[in-house]
Amino acid sequence: MIRPPADDVSRRELARLEVEIALCERCFGAEPRLPVRFARKFGSGSVLVWGECPSRRILESGERLGPDNDDAGTRFLREMLEVAEIPEEEVILGASTLCRPRSRDLERAVPGGVRLRECAAHVRELVCIVQPRLILPLGATALRSLRITFPAARTVQTLRFPGSVGVTVGAGRTWIHPLYHTTVRARVTRPKERQRKDWKALAPLWEWIAAGERGAPAVADPDSLLRG
Image (cartoon, rainbow, N blue to C red; front, side, top):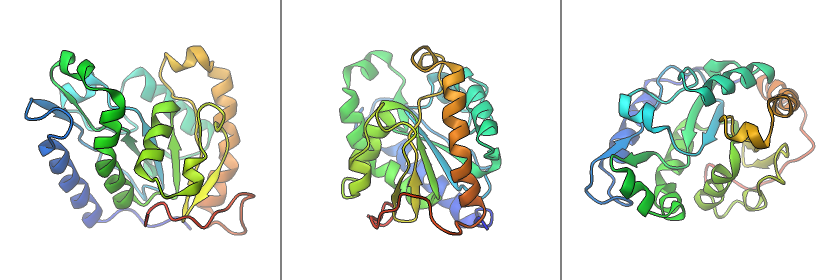
């Protein structure tokens, strides 16, 4: 069966990572920033949903990033998780970049690629803490972040958006299944009903993971994502 709920050590590690992110000056120097705070109410953390960057509204409010956030993209994500039969308590939300500067002008001034590269160490630490069995990168930025964060994982380096949407690859003990983002903007490109089909197709993989991975899916690879 899936792993038991995350213990206090994992929660302390998340708190430590939050402090590291809050003190980081790699992208924006000493300018005031809005660092992410991760939700603490997750079970095994078997599924890491990897998005772009937490919304400014969430960061400014001090709200913790989690599947119970009330923005439109997360509401649609909850709907899609239900379609895929993935319980919310198995999900932790991550992001390609884990803070924003308070200044919108400064945020626009720093190239996105720089932010992805500088934040990769924090993102990798998040994956190592959560140790997900399934990573769901949402959109092009999340896939690019995944490639930057794990350059030695051969299967990860093959992933491209949108061609890899719906493709499952293995990396170590982790499975990766790219999808479209759940934001309103992304639904212009990938309408709601198409996304429902994408997430419905994910259900058998999650069922296999939740049942203890008896047998093997069609795709496997010896690369190690979590151990580098």
